[in-house]
Length: 265
Image (cartoon, rainbow, N blue to C red; front, side):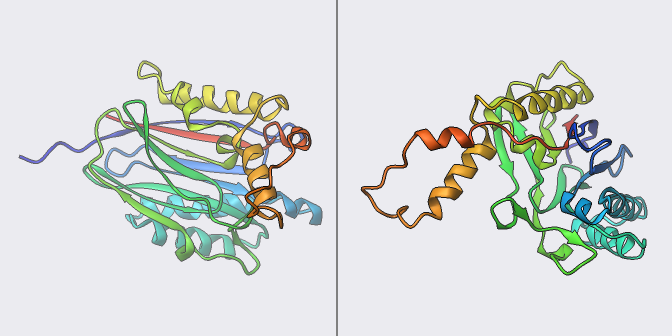
């Protein structure tokens, strides 16, 4: 006898960068029983230098993606392509990273990630899977853009199968992953809390971590690793990075933070 199909209960929280008004992230959640899906899109802030708010481009991509899913499209690259097409026809300029999760079977979810947002799957207090960041260089992610950049087929994709009741899937912009380690995230995955509350707790914790310059965070650690991997001395076995300058790299990364938490039931 086939196992019953799993449902996904979603919760969302967004904490904008304190200097960016409503922020540049956007997202969607579809709570349809047959095709529960979600996506997060992080607008590239550099467009603000040209007096263009990238959130309108991000919203156009998100709207196109959610409409495609409601029309019955389940392949994440096809969904992302529809979102990109919608943005290109919107008249807006901008660029954004994109991260999607689309349930496409009784116990499977198809995911796609383009840029430095991410999807992670947790089970029984362990990280089972996470997407890989896509960057041209450190802190310069792939994006869907009104100018030439990446295309939907460049996205990292994965079909998550054999999912179980109680599994937690998180989609989030880099504002979460740059500021909290997985071991910290796991502490918030309380089975007695609604996904909306878990998402809110994670977003608030990431916000506080982003403004704490006395701690190491994933972003500051990656900054140092990038600094010394690019050093001409990095491959010298006698080379030891001096500790004092590293203090300048400590702390989180202030940013918009959008977290979507899905619990499978």
